[in-house]
Image (tube, rainbow, N blue to C red; front, side, top):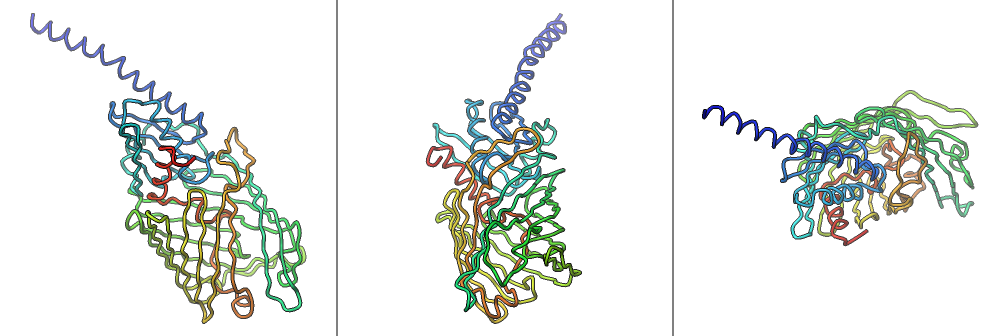
Length: 406
């Protein structure tokens, strides 16, 4: 008799739990659908009861690295009003970059960032991925402007160009970039190749990261800026949340457009650079020290000090190389809108940022021997786009969530 009662009791518990399990699964599915509707890609969602919600996604529709993160967390908070902790994995080209832990207390958000994304990646690994970014194509027209004042008989040399660019990612960590540079207006004598339609970047790159996010490597091959053709390898170790150290090695030859055809030389320039990057959260200052052998064989060092102000980055730098010194400033400012949805396979968009660098001295030995040059493997290689610094991303995601900035 008691055995029969126990069986009935167990059966009743099972029947009661089944609707709860199916409800949780439906909630996770509905949540993923809501995040996709907001323009997020590669979305995976899982729940741990009513304590924590885990989510992984890529925010290609939103400017910068923190804005899409804030949009995703805000939606998770709305869909799960009784949950106070949300752990999010942020990706780029389907490759994990960092994690955020967002906690909500009395309607106030607190967000922490870390390079270690292993907990969220493990929690969401086997969940269904929604809205894959694989093989989706972005077509972007980058504006380019070069201005030089270094000739005695010419007041100013300039080149204004437009650079239509096709970008895609075919598999996890992959990036393909094809860019043509088309001169629109120019008055230049010293760089004849700048007056021709030519290749800006035509490369394929692969990113890999360690399981705990501490190590990251990028290998790229093809045409790069500064008329270089070859391979470039970058390694980075995230020593702390604020400090990253790394190295870059490249082996390239020359590929210069000359009267309608390319003059290409075999790879003969070997460069290697050590790097240290530190982010100071209270002032938003980023200090980056680079030293070693630059692209054209000169040995030296470069120090950049940049200030991050939401979507804006401004900075100054100094170079000492080959016995020559130089200095200047750079900036990256928003150009496109905050949100550019990617619907379907092909998206035509504006660049997220316009970036420019001014060099104080561009003449004599420094200019003629092309000192202080380093490889650029993507068209928007600046300190705002693709800036996956966890403290910085967490700071500004928190400000958006708390209504301090838009």
